[in-house]
Length: 223
Image (cartoon, rainbow, N blue to C red; front, side, top):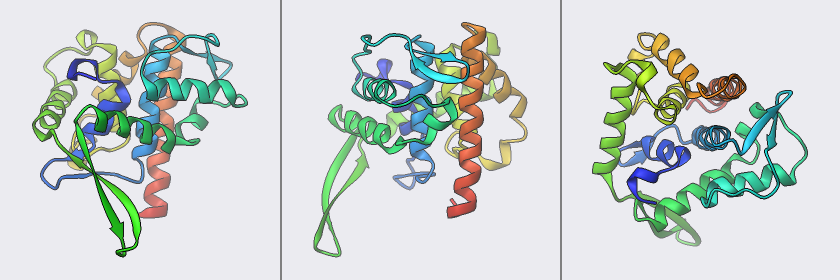
């Protein structure tokens, strides 16, 4: 997984790291953000399509070669039909765990074994490539703030920033800047699904589901 081939969910996971505190921000909503990134990428690749609001595999055989994305494809194929907004949250930690394992295997993260209360084995993941994450965050902020016109932003970059803003990642969009960038975020959301009207509908629904999830998490956990 070289830098240039990072999937949308992997980029979103890395964007969530606060390199000053060396910790992940918004941990309670991170599984939903990463899952939203995976759904968006599969939709952009044409491997998940919309059928009357249902996330539907385009066929039963195609794979991406990315274990996290392919794991989600298999999950959708083997499950009963669900709407896009349901898939943003349903078993979302499965995708998060798969992305984290990929990033660890590729050297972006390091797994450290620990014991909780000195007894129970646990694994803590530590960021290994802080400079890369800083560069990804700076790139995302440039997409958010301009000066490149939205029409010239790639659909992948637009999706990353739109979803990061929807999840209120303060590493990309500080709280004080959210209202100021609302119009740009709306335009980037639209750009994420520019390839086709049906894709635009999917991206908008996933984006809306992330916003709803963030609100729910904030109410229940204070995160």
